[in-house]
Length: 222
Image (cartoon, rainbow, N blue to C red; front, side, top):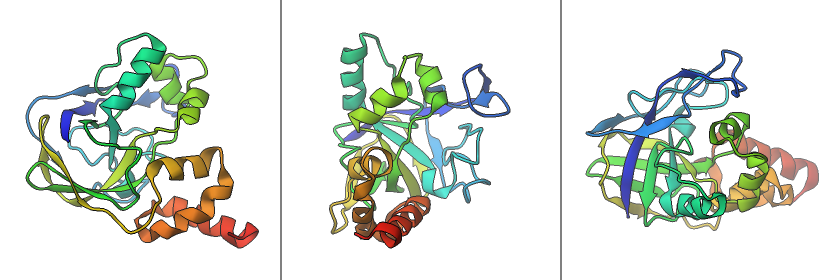
């Protein structure tokens, strides 16, 4: 398990973003050399956990619980075959493109050591949006990506440090529940009756999703 690339994006003006300011940092490209990773601060204030990476709509992106976004190269390879086009590392707006790691099958609260020092914790899956669809230029992309159910994972920074392409990734903690990123994603998109199951992940779950799951259980029961 390793990092194929570390990808950073600069703010750029585009016609397809739902950001009122008209800019997005979704166009991420692999970089050489080490990149500093640290907790960026609360959502709405903090942006990306990677130094030099732009997050332009702080209301919905970035912050401590969405500090880093990882995508498995294996999932991108499947999309390449289906779409009939090349998808470079970073094409999905991910910060980390991995090899040999089941990112969407990771457990909420699972911890990864990346390189010699950085430790990251899985919090949730990525929800596709209009900006993502516009960036890929694929008709009906939001629906197709949702139906596939392999969204990649957002992570919070537990131990800061530097990472670079080629670093080993080691799973150093797996919690004692069965709530995967893929399950969480299904629960908040196409199968909301699964929401009470997310409560088993506890405080490791992205706090907004934990609140949603609790409200659903209170209203409808388990």
